[in-house]
Length: 142
Image (cartoon, rainbow, N blue to C red; front, side, top):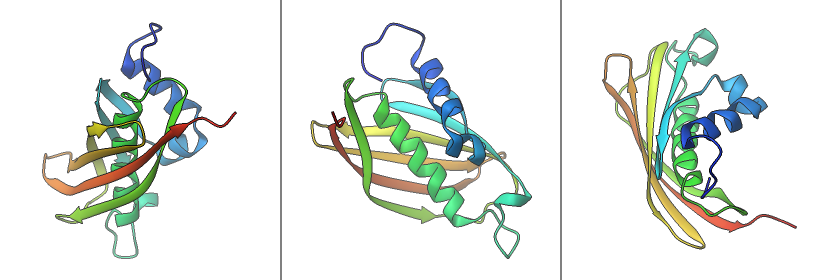
């Protein structure tokens, strides 16, 4: 997101997410954000369940990756991008349909590599998952 002056960090992230067909389809919303951190939420419904009726682990991993990536986005310079190169998720308990909140935090953002972490909780504040990610930071293609 870098040093632009038009709107807050959260407003700029919301605009990016709304413009993304993937994130719109997923149902993720930006609750709040600042330099190096983001809070997201998603209302997990029937379409997010696995064959056992629980929120699919892949959805939780995607939400964690999104939270970490957007936290890094708030810290990279304009004209740079980031992509996930490694991610580890620890699932703490099964997720059930309902509100899921994800908090992402940029741990370190360098010129080529960034590290972040995320925590996911359900609507009752129970921890569902934790994640750590490593991201490649590069210049946008010309």
